[in-house]
Length: 124
Image (cartoon, rainbow, N blue to C red; front, side):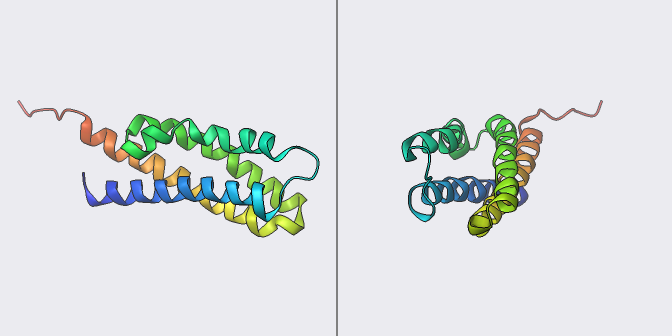
């Protein structure tokens, strides 16, 4: 694996694990929901992040590729929260930043690692 692939995977994992930790802290400790039960909000917000966990930790390019689209949900949530809830704007902007890191790192890693796994054509 090249240095660029390692960097992309590190960025993707930083965004992914940072997003996971931020959402856990935001929902349970920083600004718990007032209307819905905390457990329900955790399942709805953090549950989808558990789906690609195994493949992300093992470095599977295919998992990185489809998980990057999952990050777009969190980007959208962060931008809406930043606009709609001024009290939680800091956490929402951090969610946006982490989701962008997750998306860009995962897409670049999927591309880089996918090219490395593809058999090279021999010159005839």
